[in-house]
Image 1: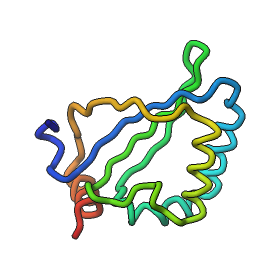
Image 2: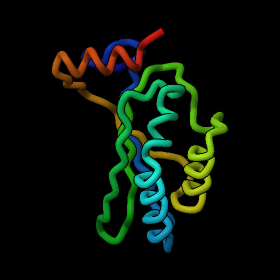
Image 3: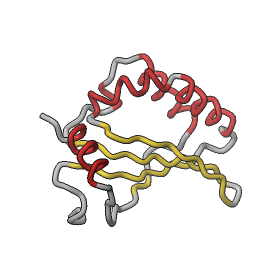
Image 4: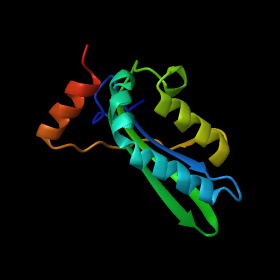
Length: 127
């Protein structure tokens, strides 16, 4: 059950994947590709009902991790159903770079100032 601070229909995610052993340079290329093609990436967020998407990288104790933060509306299209070239390139990089699957954290509370809350909900939960 979601915390009461997360409105019904809103999905708040923190996902972690370990970079494959020896694939740190591939992860560099992946993140550079996304950053250099950010306008293409943003253009695909509408179909996903993605209001916020952030990628973090953490080097910890000899391990390399990627963390994805997402705030989106339920019912958006998933990455796998996309035919946009950036999404296809993104998926191909993921296969070469990270371990399959994700470790999902459980959201505890969502704190958004009212103007930001209105913008996020207006975008993610629109009909």
